Amino acid sequence: MIDACAAAMEAEGARVVHRTSDPVHHRSVVTAIGSASQVVAASVALARTVHERIDVRAHRGAHPRIGALDVLPFVPLGDATLDDAVTLAHRAAARIWRELGIPSYLYGAAASAPHREHLADVRRGEFEGLAERLAGDARWRFDYGDAAHASAGAIAIGARPFLIAYNVELASGDLALAKRIARSLRASSGGLRTLKCLGLRLAADRVQVSCNITDTGAVPLYRVTELVRRAAARAGVRVLRSELIGLSPYNAILRTARAYSAAEGHT
Image 1 (cartoon, rainbow, N blue to C red):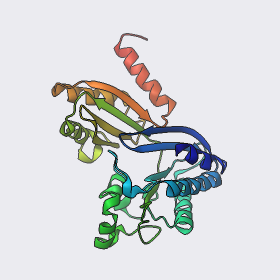
Image 2: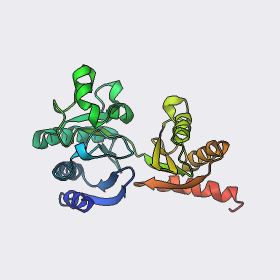
Image 3: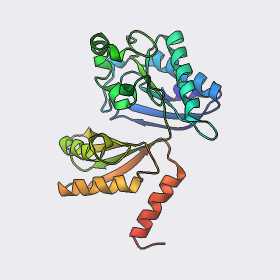
């Protein structure tokens, strides 16, 4: 399945630079780069491949989602601007609705209203709640499309700066603890500025604090790790491991390496 997604994107001229899959989240992340026309065409090709192969009505996983292709962010690199990314988000959303009948919400810098800016708000209620949301609140009509697709649901299509998806796994099955730590750290609850966090269950004996670091200069990786470690330690729980999902700016990795090296007395 992921091979087919990558092949479809590369057939449009984009270059897949990273891919990862997680059976507990029941989710895959594919990162591709290219020119403006290439990434829009690749996005449509990806949506078509997912539409043909995934029925979200039968999907279950730890991570929230509103559709088979849950989120499609455009991130400016090089000389590209965030306004350029907004333009591409609109182009992709229009084509995906016109060609495949899959609707979308625009989020981030592409959001059409303030209540749509945050991905967590767009995802609230998930795929199973789309029909009720559409029927009950006119503020949540799709930006492109007028009804959820029966098997593919909807897509959150956005424009945003680079973020780091970073998870910290705990040696505990206490989901309430993971949620409590996530709540204490995330910006929306008064925690670290620009940090987004969820507490998720991985297995009966493992939970995870799942983070999106949306300002990689303001919130270093090591600080997130150590704050989670300290909060877990107060409950007598240790950190098992951490992981990156997708890519990270080199400077963010270097900053964390230097911090831990200094803490260990190395120069």
